[in-house]
Length: 281
Image 1: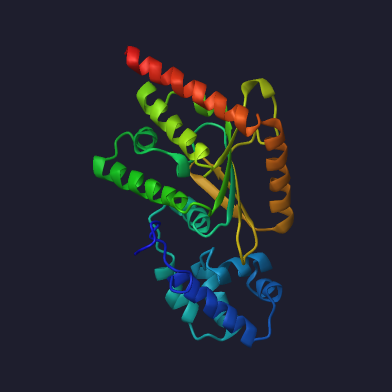
Image 2: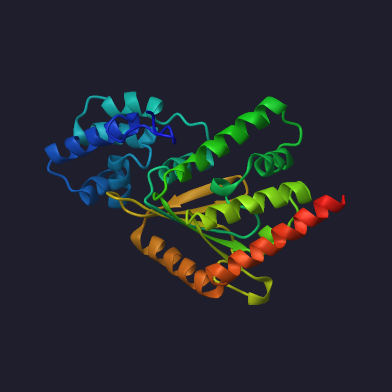
């Protein structure tokens, strides 16, 4: 039976195969990840991520790898096909890394994270982002987002820990019915022990991640990553010191948030309020 997440086995996915070739070519040259990184102007951590298949080999880096490793254009020829993605360019690498992560820690100040969204909630967001887009475009975007959520079909991996700003609960995306369903889904996942959820209440005041969303990912055999997202933009950070700094930010944020049990009670209260409002409408 096929895996419910429809995720290729690491040994057979195109990116993993190319990553394995990169590792073999590097080792044939007697280079460490750090040494190769210096020659192609990226970090050793970045080389490790490419070898593990959690980061794409970009065209300009592929050309440099072929020159340094003497691989006769192999990486330049193959990186384009391996880099095809159904996600926007600024998010593609993060989504693909997410699918390989063993742990994901995420802070969202304004909206329910994509992995936890319901179809109706996601549709409202995409319609707000692209108000003139045809229905088929919105359907495709919603489908891609729901496909990401299938990561949670696995009962144990990845470990998902989410911190939400209280604004997530109060901002009425799509009306009371949509919000009641969306929060009910989050509550259900928490009760199934599939996600740890905390809420930073308005009363907490200033906190360590006032600058915006944050996502941290760890992997079995590749260095950790931090993903920072803005409006229509995003970047992955692999520098160990930078990732460590963002990890501290998340730890401080979690310490500021309500404990999981109190957080769940707050989410359930908001859910019930929306459900009653929907019944009255």
